[in-house]
Image: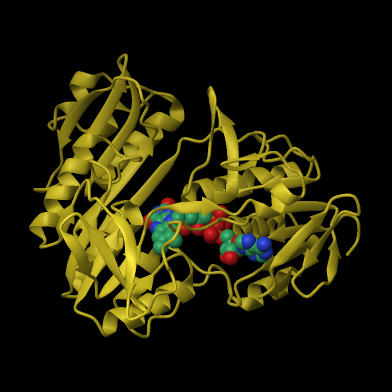
Length: 406
Ligand SMILES: Cc1cc2nc3c(=O)[nH]c(=O)nc-3n(C[C@H](O)[C@H](O)[C@H](O)COP(=O)(O)OP(=O)(O)OC[C@H]3O[C@@H](n4cnc5c(N)ncnc54)[C@H](O)[C@@H]3O)c2cc1C
């Protein structure tokens, strides 16, 4: 590698998008992509949805091997980076090999959160982050009747809905007062709760869990106020933790993520961070988002920075989740402050959007099976346009007619 080489650590959504941007700019031969998973980079979102339904479904690749080869990108899979030597400007691989970089990008993502003292290697416990986790979960599902999901967040609820569709008896245990409590409004939580219960999923909110116990040395049993509870298969879906250890050990500024500026540079100007592992400034605080939109858009900004440009990451965050018959789409950020929420009925039963205003300004829109509303709302928020609240709720008005003038 020469001193103008770009080494990318992690081979997920953000890293592959960054490769694509660099390849488009004719810089593919400068890129060395290192990933600890042994397989070609793949789409993660299907892993909690369609992938679990069909025993033989392969992963959906982000790019074929031939694409990397033709683009001149050097791909090194099945190799974790163990350390960054900032003085020598090199990374140290599992094998002990060193690879010099001109510029380094950390795109290391997250890992599934676990609970202290919980035996995650118990025979009936699964986590879900990687394709290999999903294969193991899929195999376990094929041999079980009842599934318990610990965690009523997006991934837990997606898996719960998938398992219900597979005919399993499903229980979701959520310690909080409502589902997806950190990410969506109380009104959306309530709707989703009702829909999952109507689909036959048992959901227990404010679940009280004591330290789990192991039965016959290998099966985990939950300890609940009413006594020990058997679980045939337990998915621990209680969130994700950013992979920041490499950055921390190298002395880069980190908090709940590797801190970056709005051009994605870390506290070392030769090192950037992108995707789920990066914590970026927006407004009065720093954010770390776990979404495809965030990973792809940060990669685009990082590419510009690496090539000497001055792009700035100022996102209008958006996210989607598929849970049974519900397609949830959200754009904007729900603020902690008081919001005025208006509901717009969608074209079909069960389709609606929640428009959240703060001081008459549109801040966030949550849609359920109303993709047209979501698309318009996304354009509005990206353009900094705020519609008249009264018009928004009038289902007789086409939202497109309220477009901001160009
Ligand atoms: C089951 C599931 C469903 C999801 N569904 C949705 C959805 O519906 N919508 C949505 O917007 N988002 C969804 N997400 C989130 C989305 O997948 C992430 O936001 C996205 O993958 C982040 O991309 P990334 O490149 O930052 O990290 P990742 O895609 O996680 O890639 C990081 C890679 O870095 C590797 N790595 C870590 N440390 C090292 C190291 N030291 N050396 C080498 N490699 C390393 C990891 O093994 C991993 O392969 C889902 C996630 C999961 C797990």
